[in-house]
Length: 117
Image 1: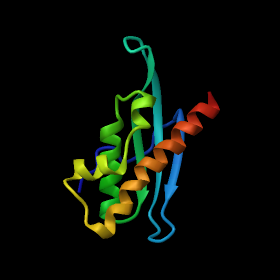
Image 2: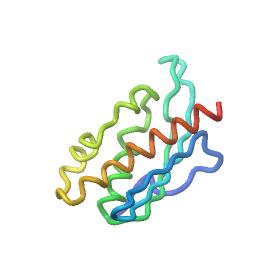
Image 3: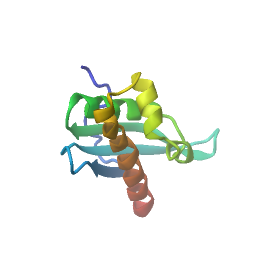
Image 4: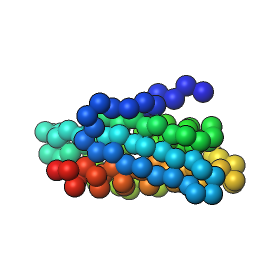
């Protein structure tokens, strides 16, 4: 009902898109990446999303952001739809595809970030 990570980031380091042709849900993910001096790796400092879709798609997008914030890029790329579903406490079978949006948009955003870099 109250997504914490919905919105845009001004001057993002990476932007990714994902969509589902069957249901029409779409997601755009914005990343801010910073070097963590302790980890000596790049981490996701902040991220926001804009999703057009059902409540399950919006909830899945918000949870994906929650799970990814503060992770290294390597850790983030290990995110699976099952992680999102588990954090949500489950999804109806017909809505499981919504959990794919965050994973696909993340891969697209990291690819975009690396290409810009």
